Image (tube, protein in one colour):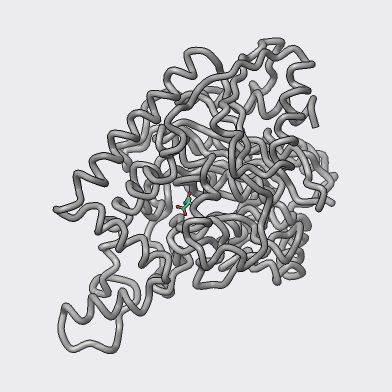
Length: 475
Ligand code: GLN
């Protein structure tokens, strides 16, 4: 067990000399070794992490430390860190080294976090179980026969197993929230554009976001506050000012209005998850929160819309891996065209290939109107539903995932069943709104269950306040 509650407590303890940062980092490195079977990390940086711990500890002792000094961070292997491998858990980038550092990561480094390693994930962040990785599957630390969720499964497992303090993930359709819920921790996806995507390997650019995993709401707030903000290197990043998130977690008697949508409690939802979420809603009502029913009437189209649009964007984004400029190049080719074909055929995994084919299909001349254009229109309807809902309520409560973590191999032969694991999370990416998964219960078999909170664009303050309230008063 770690002797501190959150990043603030950790910093205080280091300041008072009650905690040695070097020992803390050594502890994490040992834990990573002991939990090697989880396969959470693609790479670890032991020497650099220890060296950094000594430096940061000195800074803390002399009062010159950054906001997040001493926080031990793991980074999903889709984010660039200069001089470190960047594989996206794909054979096609097996030997690739990043040539610059992602803005979000750099901002954290500037506030004195210590990076301990890069975490395993589904190949190019495509998946819901972390079984699509060239580095092999990640195991759920709560039950090793089950998946940790995906695509940021390594980050979620690392935080849940106590192998680091916090971890970064990317969320295009639920890849932070769903693994957070499967592993029993907090996972937040910010508003689209809140955090610069510079240095995040593109999957579906109009959906991709960078967010964080932690064991408490305070650490999530602090990390998001540092990562957020406009960046000259990402023209889609927002110029909105970043509010004080970490210093402002209390609701101060402000009663936020909560909403629930019947569409998120229908067929396909496991009865245990349903009753866990309803129990939390009952407790919130008892504590004086008003919960109003709202309607998200286009919910039934979210999975189809998401998988048409993201595969379209992916097919374009992944065209750059052609064997010519960087990454894997096939030996078995005698012409340029053959080189493209063989390099991509040999080095992409089957889920990535499936998505490139689907995306190419929905964008092709004969089908563009029927699929891509139509899906763009439905995306607008889904966004409109949320706009209407947020006129009435501040936060929408939903399950994060229809079931707790499933068994390894259980859904690998049926892609559609796997895609349905994203039924409650993809809507936030379609609408560009922020969402968080809060661990609120355990199933009868001891598996974690997550509650998803959704807020309107740029309303991360309410999302974090409500998460903190639930953490402190409901659990
Ligand atoms: N599971 C979803 C997918 O496979 C979400 C992935 C993500 O958010 N990166 O696309």
